[in-house]
Length: 247
Image 1: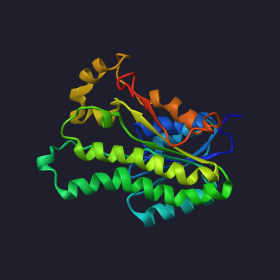
Image 2: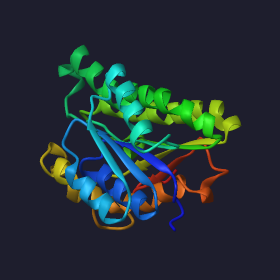
Image 3: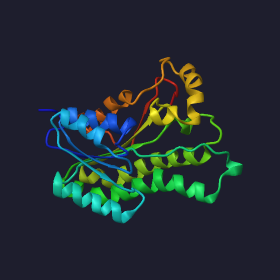
């Protein structure tokens, strides 16, 4: 019996990378897992089910309220009411502010910020009904660093911190905690194929732990935040970055 036995967890962007590591860890802890992602999450499903947990994945546009409503209903009908929500999905295109269009700006805010609102709005009612819930939002250490060509992304990740604090204030009376995780640059297939790969060495040298972060480095922090061990912790941003940012 894991510490999350009987719990149902929802993870956005769980088909690969950080979200996949999160799904596997929560399944190891005993939770059943549902993933919303525009990509195929069958590999994640194999990992989750190998831990003895139930799994549901639906290819879902998390910026579309109707698709989220359909996803929420599918989770409830297939697995049951979810009391753990991990708003993990995000995009991080590099573009100088001078070249940034309003459409570029809106796209990143839609995926990185609006989707947090929409997913939380869809799943919080079941948490209130259960008298218990855990929400974890993904921020980033870019909020404290000098990094150019990411003003749109930095804004979205700072918004994640603000949303975390605001929502925590409203939901605490329902025994629902809301926290955030701020990782460093994480090495995975997506970042390796992006311009960020050119920053791997520099970021490593900025950290106290001089190796690049990988998705599994974040799984323990998530496991803690959604467990009863963190029952009196809310509105906080947990920096998991190998000692790069000194807050």
